[in-house]
Length: 204
Image (tube, rainbow, N blue to C red):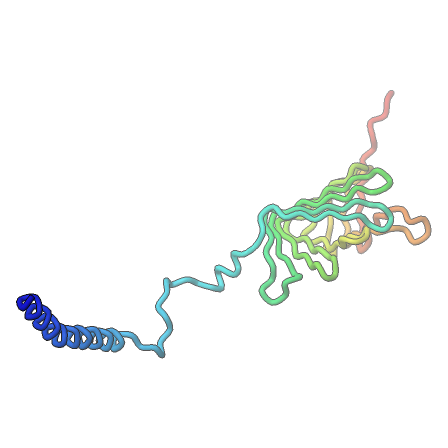
């Protein structure tokens, strides 16, 4: 029993020396680490262009479909679309395909390299190699086509050219909208229209 008491006494005595030394060592280590880190500086992170990452946000293969008040069906899809950083309702899309199925039976297919769409105003401005093909004989190209997504409306603020049902046509502006009187779709060419008539084959 005496030996056990002596061992216990010596253990307690050593612990009174070792534990304070360990505590001192830990504190000194913390102070050394704190000297190597400046809390006023930003936390180091991997070099990333945050603006580029924000620009990369978007959706792949987005689509929009709706029906006008007169029953025309409008659909738009794109390979990619992303919101404007300054205006979330403003979308920028690439490789756009749009289709209008009119109540008259005419189908209008439109493609373009890119488009700017606004969800607030329900407008879509197509740009870059805009191609318009209709089932009633028009095959037209232009650089810009302004459209609406809630009603039948499309216009080219610049020149348009291509094939028409009776030949080839060039014009400074094209407008597609509904006729005020009948409500039917109406395609109008203005600003220096040039129509080259091509006679159809006539049986002898």
